[in-house]
Length: 362
Ligand SMILES: *[C@@H]1O[C@H](CO)[C@@H](O)[C@H](O)[C@H]1NC(C)=O
Ligand SMILES: *[C@@H]1O[C@H](CO)[C@@H](O)[C@H](O)[C@H]1NC(C)=O
Ligand SMILES: *[C@@H]1O[C@H](CO)[C@@H](O)[C@H](O)[C@H]1NC(C)=O
Ligand SMILES: *[C@@H]1O[C@H](CO)[C@@H](O)[C@H](O)[C@H]1NC(C)=O
Ligand SMILES: *[C@@H]1O[C@H](CO)[C@@H](O)[C@H](O)[C@H]1NC(C)=O
Ligand SMILES: *[C@@H]1O[C@H](CO)[C@@H](O)[C@H](O)[C@H]1NC(C)=O
Ligand SMILES: *[C@@H]1O[C@H](CO)[C@@H](O)[C@H](O)[C@H]1NC(C)=O
Image (cartoon, rainbow, N blue to C red; front, side, top):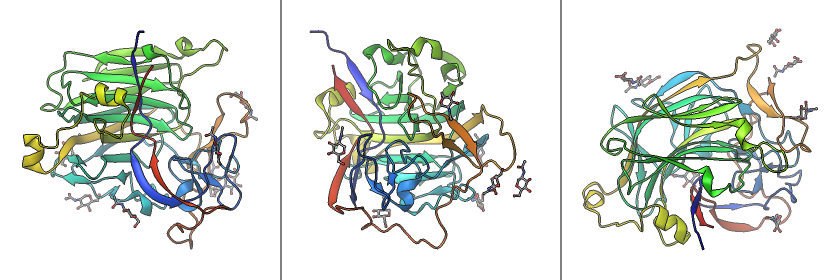
């Protein structure tokens, strides 16, 4: 049997204790806890921010709309606009450009290091704003350790996804992939660029140039892969091209660990050696990010536009997206999320939730 590896980069290996009912397309959230989080649990407050899935929430308007794109360069020499714990984010994109969703970062004065330890499960940052087509360039160095994966992706609330991912055992390569609404694609969907100068020792510019009809991946300004929307039409005639507003995410995550599927562990270079001399010396693994620049493709029709909102059109395979002037802030006067809010069952569960990376052997 011919086996090939498909790597599905969803989000992060999150281990968090929350209460709440589970939500999915057949079981949307109840009115009392209307927002379906990126991990598939119903709640209020920050469940309604980044990652909130409109199609599995109580209604299409339960989630806060997605803050609009802004063309700028985020320079990580200064971390004052990175919120170190996403739990405390109130939706205010004037205050914070990024949240640390898990793990931690360190600032060297010229860049940040995303930290992976044997106990933290890795680190992930998300942009507070969304991109609805645009060119995103991350200037970064990867990890260099088998089992340790460095990633730079875009991810929408309904799990349209575009990836750069760099397994640490191959520091002269970088891999790309794309996903539509979380579906596992054909094995031919992934691609590898080879012949890079050491990606641990050297900064490279990894770019995702995502336009409505065409997606280009670039390294150091050179196009290494092109995917046309017209090439993604499946046998039903549905385009499986990523088309919904997406956050930019940066991460380092442990793929080579026993809790991961065997295919993921193999793909990432085998299990992590926590006795690696680098780990012993520094007490951590890391990946460095110097800056992220974003050139939005859209021109806002007026200055009052705050956000992108999903249309009232869930019957089509790809929901419509419209500009909105609605507030992106969580309600004033509502304090930190009440972890006990969880709808009818209110059961407490341990989410070892899906997954910064699930590699499936198919
Ligand atoms: C959807 O969620 C319900 C619980 O709310 C669960 O029983 C069911 O198995 C889920 N379906 C899928 C396809 O995950
Ligand atoms: C980031 O800011 C530092 C310090 O101000 C500056 O030296 C560096 O050139 C900036 N980098 C980018 C990519 O703008
Ligand atoms: C970082 O930026 C903030 C505001 O943008 C500024 O107040 C602060 O002084 C800067 N910190 C450093 C170390 O440059
Ligand atoms: C973020 O804050 C929440 C709530 O206080 C806490 O449970 C969680 O451990 C914090 N996360 C990190 C990575 O410190
Ligand atoms: C923007 O909002 C202001 C204040 O609500 C309003 O006066 C103005 O007409 C709006 N502009 C547009 C283009 O809608
Ligand atoms: C429904 O979706 C289709 C396809 O995206 C779009 O052309 C149409 O305008 C949408 N209708 C509404 C009412 O949003
Ligand atoms: C949004 O725009 C509509 C009309 O264009 C206006 O009535 C409404 O007050 C605006 N809402 C906000 C929050 O600016």
